[in-house]
Amino acid sequence: MKIFLVGGTGFIGTNFLQLALGDDHFDEIIICVNKRKPSVSSPKIKIHTPCRIDDIKTLKIDKNTDYIIDFAGIIKETRDKKFERVHHEGVKNLLRVAHETGARGFVYISAAGVDGTRDEAYMKTKWLAEEEIRKSGLEYLILRPSIVLGPDGDFTKMLKIMFKLFPFIPVIGEGNYKIQPIFVGDLVEIVRRGILQGIKGTFGACGPDAVTYKEFLKMIKEQLKIRRPLMHIPVRLVSLFAQLGGPLSPVTGDQLKMLLSGSTCKDSKIFTLVSYAPKNLEETIRISFLS
Image (cartoon, helix red, strand yellow):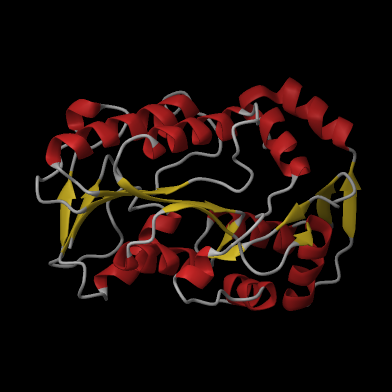
């Protein structure tokens, strides 16, 4: 099987690449690369560069490619990376070349909570991307994970720094908004199994344990054996800072809104369909923060 991998140099993409390289079902992996190159090498890997999903002129996919896998995504806009261009326009471009080259399948990583009713730019453009895929006529697998944890993930790294250096652990508001983290190794495994087993549809992809954000931080404290207290930061203060800080603010208004809305799955039947049991949250935290 030949696959075209977008976002293969990012957190989730790198973990999938390492998994796919050890699987004989994947004969060739073409990686769409703009600047950052893969951290691993293999005779199976073919680098396609320059390659940007928001520039269709740079997308060249071999005619015998079986699956296009899109791990590309941003959580915050920058001057040259916008939600609409990366999430929505990027998927439209990939689908266009998929039809031109005869690729049969498409895999997309969306987000828990995406349902067409959200007005945050991140969630809205993820939904628009999903809709493009669903009406494309291709075989598709869309996964909606909550927070994805792993030793090399940006979110994990940020929390490690916070727990190591801060005199207290900041919590926005009361911290009662729920999350349902999944271990990155479990997420990429269900992508692998989903492709090989021909699973089609849109599925939640969360870990087995839904907890409040406050409970989540306490679990990390226990694993790291840290006694620093939690300090609750008023939502209004964070919201004001987001408005006044602009691009310098560590959190945007939309990110704050998404955080307070929670991130959980209504169902995670994908694990039953692919016959795989994800790690519980305690083990996920242990691997992510103590590795």
